[in-house]
Amino acid sequence: MNNNKTIVVGLMGGLGNQLFQLQFAIEMKKKYGATSIIVDTSYYNNYKIRSVEIDKICNNENIIFTNDYKDFKYFLSYKLFFLIQGVYRHFRKKGINFLLPYISKFGFFYTDTEVDRLPNNVIGNKIYCWGYFQDVNYITDLEEIRNYFSTEDFKKDISSREVIKIAISVRCGDDYISKGYPICDKEYYMHSIQFIEKKCKCKKQYILFTDDYEKAKCYLPENISYINASNYNPIDQLKYMAKCHSYILSNSSFAWWGAVLGEYNQKIVILPEYWDMAHKTNSVKLIMDGFYIYKEDF
Image (cartoon, rainbow, N blue to C red; front, side, top):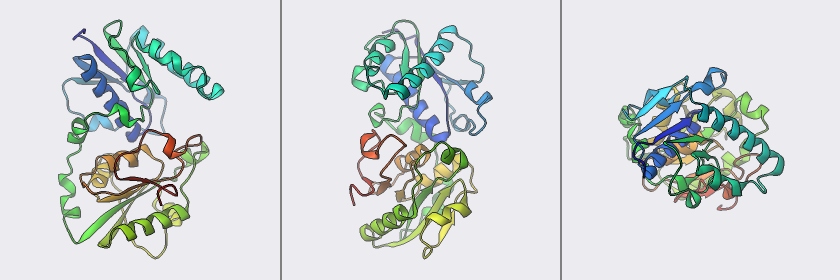
């Protein structure tokens, strides 16, 4: 094993996706004995809907952020990633997955590369990672990521043992809707709240995490009052969410991480029936202990 390897990961999307990408890079650093991780943020030079957030909390001398990483093989890995994504969309992944283990031997790691098919050795001294890596099988240890999110700031808000805090995620941004992603409806939130009410008889307080507070209330039962957490920045929202006791999630990687980082051992996490346009939630690799899928587990 070459202990001088470097992991290079291209960052994309919002904070939730950034966490998946950094977590994957951390796991690959451990697997291949790499000495450092380079996080390239140049994608955001032209992508203005989301911004880089994770650099605000990641203070590790072995993780280097740059917005102008220059490397021909990295440029090639970027082009190859989007070529593969185009082929996936056209052929719905048929006949293409078998290529990923072979590509990874040359240091190109992409979304849908299966954990048990990762090579033992990689040619060259750099591993290039492009994708979303939304797969719990890539996560062997959450502590390094969890340590970036000190939740001390929110202890006073969550400290009461008499009141259980329930985080509700409602996603209604125009960029999300315009791409045709499924939006969780009022029925989902109503039944999910009823499910939690049956499971937990304690006094509860519902905390709303959303990109549009006024619009989000249209999706929720009117007979419940909600605390608005949308005024916090994304990092602090995630810290706040991690201090809650249970979760009703939208199909959002940000909300998923809020629940996974949660410190309460007996938490209930409810996920919608569909994770994206093409996949039911039970078909994606995001289910952990204590997670319930709407309709299927109700």
